[in-house]
Length: 87
Image 1 (cartoon, rainbow, N blue to C red):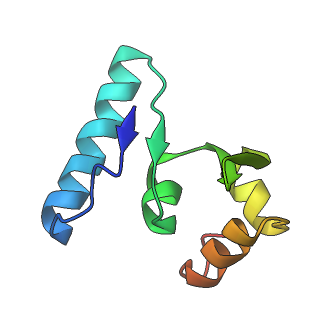
Image 2 (image 1 turned 180 degrees about the horizontal axis):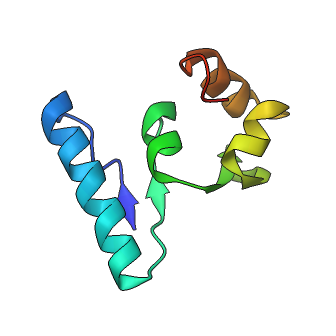
């Protein structure tokens, strides 16, 4: 469980840590649960997503598929802040 692991980190360290987490998860064949408010972190590390709003499940599935037609306010906001070409 990674709860906002990149907050407060500069970009170079954040990118390095993202690579390390991706490599560790792949090598150990383990799932990673990422709690984040940053759409770029989510898109760069996660294939699947669960979206919670006020503690309630709003959406779940493959993140890029969810971003194509978001129904929750959270993913609608994420999509606005995503660079062109990711969603």
